[in-house]
Image (cartoon, rainbow, N blue to C red; front, side):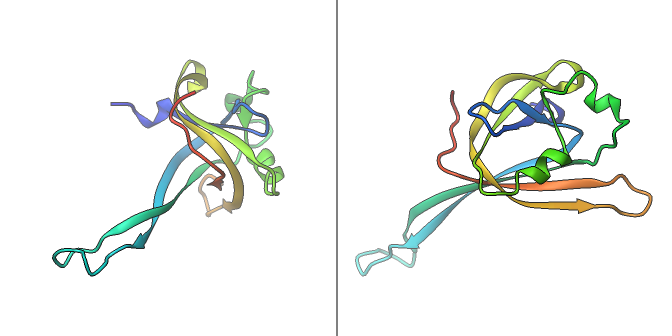
Length: 151
């Protein structure tokens, strides 16, 4: 069984997802299918028959809002750390590339074997700042095209 800290979301606006979400707390991949009722007079019994007409997915992740002095998360990771500043810049119509990978190494940021990958568009950004609690942000990425389980 794989523990959550060893599965990370990587993202980029180039063809390979290279930046890990820094200070991530949670990530969820949700896949769903739209169905159309295909029950006919020929259907036996009281059961409904459905046909899948489309499949979609989205990814939601949340992370700590880092300050400039959070060296634990940013030290030596300028090419792979992704934070709130980058998320704000991607709420336009650009297509982003993402992958979910097994990880290892310092701060669990060394990309290992692929779990799945695809393209997406960032569709929402929320910031939560509760009294006396760590400030967090969450991003929703809506799938754009096919999700793949292989390279």
